[in-house]
Length: 594
Image (cartoon, rainbow, N blue to C red; front, side, top):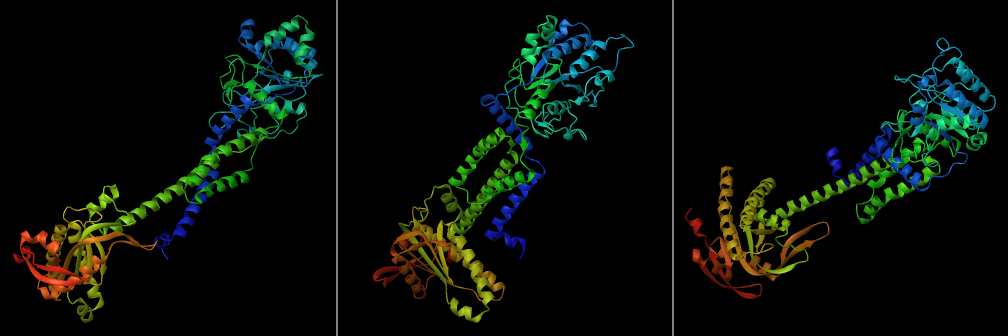
């Protein structure tokens, strides 16, 4: 069986559609087509959780910010802030934090050759502080992304090696994940925040999504203020602010390196999603030391959900399915938001795209099937009525009710004279070809005069005029159709004679009466037909054509409509259908002139 033949099988088309939806779902998963949508949804979820249910952090990170006032207060270039940083370290020694992280660009080399003993105070302060509290230094990336070295004397003053503050951004330039292996080779355990977390008892934080719903927006304590407290020997203030806390020193001024994040994080800039890098490091620490980094749903779980979404292909499209389609994204949003709150990330983009494709594919499939069905009905009904009437029915201008109606029509019954004998004498194929040629010509004649074909039975043709399109004079339309049928009979005969076959003669009967018209048949097939005793009358009337000696016989009402045209003669009163009927014979004048 060929593919085209198999496509005619509804079950095969259904299975093919399901297979296509499943393949597309796998493609969405493999090519990560929904990642962009997933990221946007994740940002909205974090924004919602951060605004409405941000959980507080016990023993939160304290940020000491080097702001614009600090840069204005100290005139030296930042690379020569050794004395100020030494004073800050001495303040931390007095305050006793649980761990201190210096997220600043530390000197890459010693300035001993230029300023003898200039860095000695900072080195001693680092050594003294490291003896009682862990200190983690940061290695910043340069313009090319390579990590800058840290002056050997400073690095040797602390226990831990300096940690990288490189952040791996998503494709849209937003920081959402902590996973240095996404942009750095063999980076596990080398980051600034991992080293601080290890000092706080979190030895293997792993990789995951940063929990941006943890904690409130960050504020900072100005660097210059800490130095004032130190200068005033205000140990009580220092201890109250920093003792037992995780402290990060970083730049928060306009000159700080900024990172795009899903939610605003700074109290001093409540709408800005571009925040100083030290705030991002602090949020990563919050995630690691709080409930942990958010774990992504395993790949196999995401693939299964995307495939399940493709099952929206199943079931016919209706109000129930439309409601499911409308409600499912909301339910998934609520479920994913709840899961995010408990530390699991459910990416919705691929699921939604897969479901949308399956739903639209099924909707499109059913629409095409409906169109094909309508076209099939249109083609079928086109065989009943002419194109003008058909367009009127389709546009609603003509009523074509399927429950039946009683109307006055002019019935036409035509047949080929002595066709049964002809069938016995000639090959079956010859008879079939003749009928097809004949009926094609007769159908054109009926349609051109706004008639409706009822049925073909053997060589007999039944048509009626006046339904579904109401006509001013159905009798006149029927007579004009009969005249054209006789003209087209001549064309058929010319082709028969050319092929060496004898010509045919046709007999036509016309009668006016009340009939019931409508679509009659089974659920699988219906015919638009006429019902009533008048059908029997016109069928009996055609039998009189032989004795009348004319190609057309008709009842009195029909004869009255054609009387002015001439060629009409009275046959007499005949009993037809249980009643007396005046019968007339008609030879169209137009035929006599040809």
